[in-house]
Amino acid sequence: MLKSCYHSVFEAGTDEAGRGCLAGPVTAAAVTLPKNFNNDVLNDSKQLSEIKRTLLRPILVEEAASFAVCHVFQDEIDEINILNASFLAMHRAIEKLRPSPDFIIVDGNRFKPYPDIDHECIIKGDGKYMSIAAASVLAKTYRDEYMAKIHEEFPMYNWKKNKGYPTKEHREAIKKYGITKYHRKSFRQLPEQLTLDI
Image 1 (tube, one colour):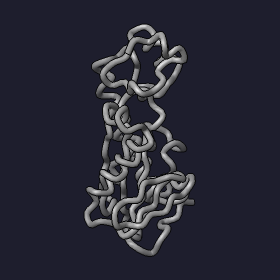
Image 2 (cartoon, one colour; image 1 turned 90 degrees about the horizontal axis):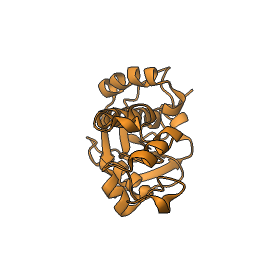
Image 3 (cartoon, one colour; image 1 turned 135 degrees about the horizontal axis):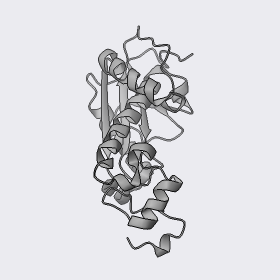
Image 4 (cartoon, helix red, strand yellow; image 1 turned 45 degrees about the vertical axis):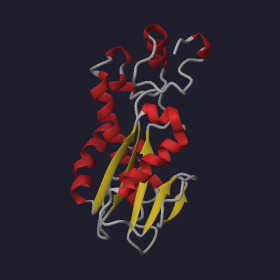
């Protein structure tokens, strides 16, 4: 059973999706929920089926006190590294929340402090607190939607299915076709990276 809040203050939960992918953005969401919000289906997005995530998204969008979703794309990931890009995506999402939260709860064990707002990192927080779970669902669904869109441009990588993660099928396509403008050049695309001309 997810808890409604961590603090008694007006708090936002934040989480990201796509950190381990070979292609596409890392996507973060930040969410503040009304105090009376409750949903029995809501959970860590990784524990939910795609159908449940899709059904939850409009509910969260409609009922959240405030939410924002932000992509940080592959060029910026290559420039600042994936960990910093994840923090940046979360910061950009938090920045868009209106009103600004008094406190931030973050899924995981690391976070770059956001200016003038205290935070707490919570390991597996997306399975403990509703606002982080809501952020995980929104980050995942918005990112999946983006990957399905760019799949149309490069269907041979099957991003509609693998979402840019390093599946065997995705790596085989890289081996056969090379990389695209959406691939993260700083990532090890293939085990034999030195043979891949990037």
